[in-house]
Length: 168
Image (cartoon, rainbow, N blue to C red; front, side, top):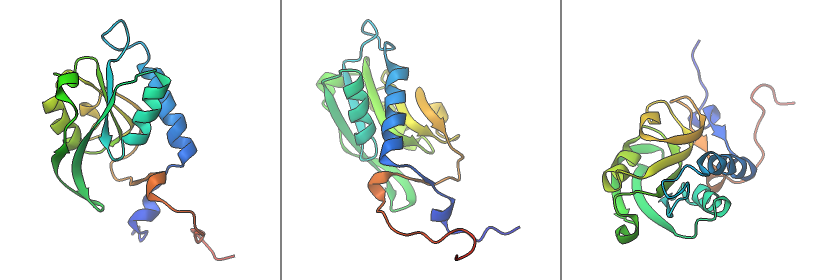
């Protein structure tokens, strides 16, 4: 059988409510697991997708030091070689000990590999994980198939969608 669906029709659509619940679940999984008597000294969000989950994790775990690392690894829906555009404060992060690095998704793991080179002792946590990237992440909530495209709420607008089958 030939699958004539467009890529966006094979997608997994995540609502704001769902990303909030899943990010809180990630925080609960990480609670008490840090090296500093169970605590974490900082959260580093991988921008842009990791910003919302990192904010939620930082709030839930009462982590006040939050920074970002900007890694560009997609050009629209095409994955490219990852490039660090902006690094976090390395005086705070050091080798990553006690630092939570948070992203929305690990796909192939190439982005996390670049960040892990900068902070080898950090704990890498994502909300969603695909099989190829799973070895690069220490904690995650939900595994999705490698061929699934996840549509996050910050990428979407509310609009009418035709039913999959039929018109009435």
